[in-house]
Length: 295
Image (tube, rainbow, N blue to C red; front, side, top):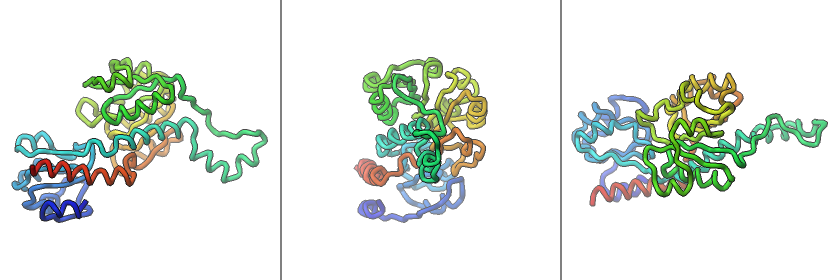
């Protein structure tokens, strides 16, 4: 990426700056015209200090690290890379669900530790298995990634329903659009594939969990704060939520020990789009966007 960007102009690269608001951010941006970031925030204060900014490019799908409303006021376009991880995040979300269904990692360890060998029965398992055939999957956010997940769920012969504020013809071919309350009431598994907006922040909360089926499974590969973690933990403790698969967290690195160490939580460190192929696409796509901006 650095090599390609240098073909477009003068480039200064900092591998790490800050995940939180810091004077260092504006200091490093200086008089640059184009700012390329990932998780480094660009606030109102930073934009006011760096008056030469003409474009903010986010090396990710989510762009909530930028005060994009203020950027719009200042006439600064904010661009992201919405398609680089579409397929892999869908695959990853399904992988979290399959891990919950069969506990592959745990049973791999059981074989290696000799638990199966020393078991009096021919088969050995520590958890009740879940069969997905015929069950209902609800997807909150049927955009690109939600649709990629829906295709996989259809292949498993699940009934797929979805809620999205903006319905599409492509979505209608993959899922039945329903209201949010109907999705909560009907789903055996709920996938979060929605951006972090005021309307989706804390969408999995105490009130909405109460509307769900007993024993529902929740998968989140979108943004951590789309889930009220205290409410989810309480629902796991009560059994209302059977299990959760979480790749994203309210604080990252994850600090909610009670949640990530819960025996019915399968968790990973925000790596849903961490394949070499997806990361390579980030570079090529963001360069294409910057070239379009120049044009």
